[in-house]
Image (cartoon, rainbow, N blue to C red; front, side):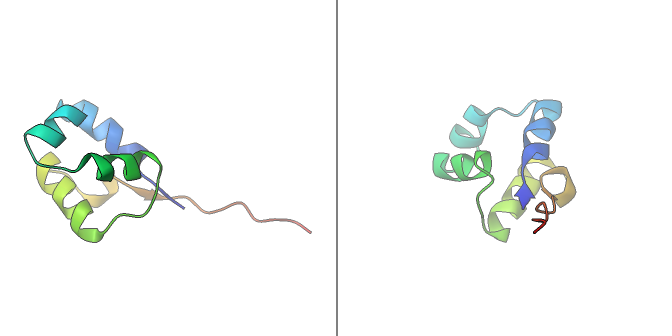
Length: 71
């Protein structure tokens, strides 16, 4: 699973709010909702966030392995 929890921390550190993303940078509220739900987004969207926040991909997202079901 891809987690976007790092995005919210990076935004906090950089002083960028969701309001600013939408109204200053033109990010769609639907994209923010998808990120909050850890749903899939395009690499273009990730690149836009990296540009806005002047950060690296790993500052926005991380891969978390799914728990293995033991039978």
